[in-house]
Structure formats: C-alpha cells, structure tokens
Image (cartoon, rainbow, N blue to C red):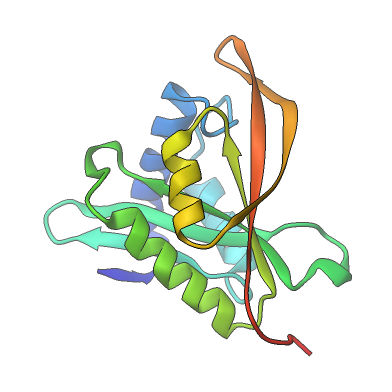
Length: 166
C-alpha cells in the first residue's frame, strides 16, 4: 500500500535512510540521521511536496519516495528534486516502482513541470529504473562527492511533465 507519510513513520524512514548512509555511497551523508531531523524536513515542505511511504502489513514502512526543493529561487518552483529509498530486504519486489508511479502522478497533478533525480555512479540498476520511467540523462558531475574512500560521479536525470503550470 502506498500512502502519504505520517509523523510516526519517521523511525522506519530514518532506519532505511541510515542503512544507505552507513553502508553505501548511494547516499552522500556521513552521519546517521535522526527521525526528528527527517520529520522536521518533511513538516517544513509537506504542503508543497509529496512524501510517500510503502507499507507492508507485516514489516510496516518498507520504502519511501519524496520530493523537495531543487533550487531556492522562485523561477525554479516548477521543478523538484526527488529521492527514493527502499528497505534493503525489499528490493526487486515492486516497492520502488509503486512508489515512483504514485510520486510522479502526484507531482504532475500538483502542476510540476519536471522532476530531477541524481544517481551516484556506478549504479546501472538505478539508471535503468529511471530510464524505464521516462527520465532522460541530462548530465554528469564528475567527482561530485567523496565517500567510502572514493570519488563518485553523479548523473542527473530529468522527467518532464506535460502541461503548463501557469
């Protein structure tokens, strides 16, 4: 089941996020994040940006997808940066696909013109996933971040929505 995030979801959201921070280069954070920190970010932007969770009857929250500010200036308000994280034990079960389908539908209905996703390289599965959703590669920043003893490039993908935001 996909639904809007709730305040009580952030213990699991933090646990999922911290797995990626502590064990991968996919997330560029170095220090674990607290549920309160993530909850405050969600609360500050939730009127404008969707934040969705995938819930399993047995496991509870097993993944999340979120949107947020891409750049601060007013002219950028029709573009959003998005992120998706799925519990490591839930990969390849359709969780990410269901979250992205709903997130993109919600962003379109809110009048966004495009969504930007950044992918730490190498990550062929994530690249293929985004291409399958109609994202286009719009550029790569070389040596964008240093984590786990290596420099990592980040490739950016853009999904464009139809319509005129007005």
